[in-house]
Length: 566
Ligand code: WTA
Image 1 (cartoon, rainbow, N blue to C red):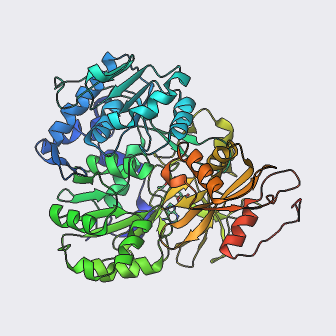
Image 2: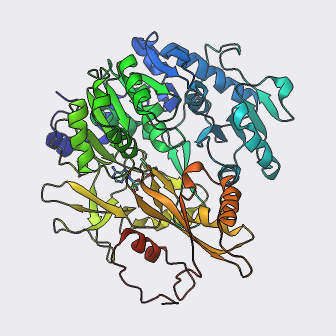
């Protein structure tokens, strides 16, 4: 029997207040996520239970109980306070998937800071844009990433301290301080900031089509949704060994890689190493993973290696599997039944929604290729793209939209009210994706409604890539689009028009690629470059990425009446 029981019954009867009560959210005036992920579990008697089993890329293993989690996060919280971090200050986590990242996240929340996790592979320009926008006060990082921080710190007057978790003070410069989590004097009692449900907690940057990346700002009350979705969708139970493969630089890695599993009191395992089919199967076998949350690109990479390699490992511990980030093709669902004896359950949500909103549920029939149904407490529909009225005819494609009001909904885009407001139409939050709904109420994802590129589950804004490209002396104009890819769904393709006097050749292409490599994250790097005499533009001068994209995908081009140079 699954945790949710009957989906239909829960969908009609559930109210968020029930999840709040079940979690005892607000007991003794306490609303802080940091408390509910550590001290709360210790008070419930799980202090000696493993909270985190971590494995580094060299094979080194570290174990942390819930009591360790409580004490180490206290220690970090106190250290931040001692370094003049105040309630509401933004503290960036810029680290690989090491224990300090996970425990540091809890520590920041405990002292009332706003956690700003950023993917450690970001180039310095990507890092700078996000620290500058958030006016980040402190960054916590590792020696290996310090170079990037040093190269931009002079341009960030608000960044007062750089905390390095693995360096001796003697190797550090002014305003850089070392902090060894496990060697610092431990803090058993820390006065956790009680917070209120609407107090800001986490700032996650996400890319749009235009402009800078936007910081989706979440609040402590988000834990209510993260808790109940972890319980009902991921089906987490106390005896689970849970593995979320996402990096906390993205929302999946925090909502379901930190908050969800820990508030549910499970043991979570983390592998700080890249993808490898056999490495992953060996990790599941060794740790007897029971619940596995991953992404379609990873599943497609496993599929490529075939079924024989699966048989080399004992994966019988797996009880439930789920996926997020991109469309999960029906073949992947069917393959996983063959490979692991159970399907991957597709889950749909966004940085902005903070928690799963449309999904497949254990116990509810899966229609392979469909994203499933709305979570209880979520009203979801598809809207007519012109009138923004709900579409009532089954099978008609429209814009996915949600009725605002669930606890983990972002409360703002940091310092960008205009873009935030533009997301709402007729009282609906419009996700920016297209889908249809069938007669049984299942959602079928069609595609994004903007030019954002989804490569291996990671959103990449074309604007960032184009801005980096046009800084190169030879580039007159540039456009970046997603091109179909059998594994990553999309990869970045760049179209470049050169300035007069420059000729396309391999050396120039390499030069341009090396030039932008420093500015972008590896994911945003174009896999293909095409030189063109000029780019198609609208009469108002906007590059028509839609046209370039349609050509790549072999799709109908649609209305091009506004095209300038047709
Ligand atoms: C896409 C990730 C199809 C979608 C949690 C969405 C999906 C964006 C699915 C959010 C899915 C996410 N099927 N597409 N199951 N899940 N997406 O903000 O375009 O990094 O709007 O959050 O990923 O990506 P984000």
